[in-house]
Image 1 (tube, rainbow, N blue to C red):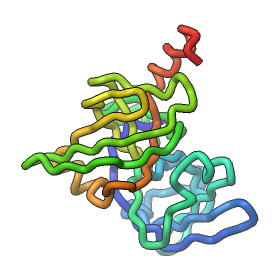
Image 2: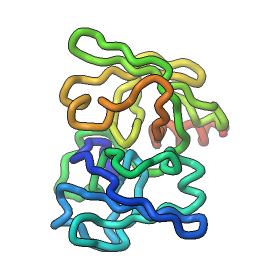
Image 3: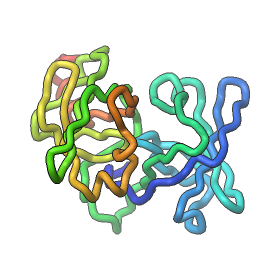
Length: 196
């Protein structure tokens, strides 16, 4: 479980293909604290650390993960948002995030608002639980955000300067692909109401 509060960004040093899997070697600033079997969210995707090297750790994405997320488009040198899993001693500053990406979205607009940035994203509405509500929570590339405008298959979020500078939001432009995780409580409510 995660909060959607990003701890750091990290560079992808290397990507290796093995059959239908991809191995990603991540140069995390907190590498000395990383352990094998630890769960870390990468742009919102919960992945297990499987190896620790001198300059990086390795995680593996299987074909299912690559198909459901933006990971198949990641390149060496890209920066990813990182968050280690929630502990009982850690404040729940964002919202409850599972690290289970529901779908991807495309940035359709990026506006500078003289002190903040407004991003609009569009996604394919494949399931009834793929919904947002204004002032509700959404997780974009692992970042816990509040929905500003909500439509059938699109929404907007506004980003403060701190978030813009300390996540990979500064690299998101029109047509960029991002990972989305919809609010877990909203998904359960939709299921209970027979919307799924």
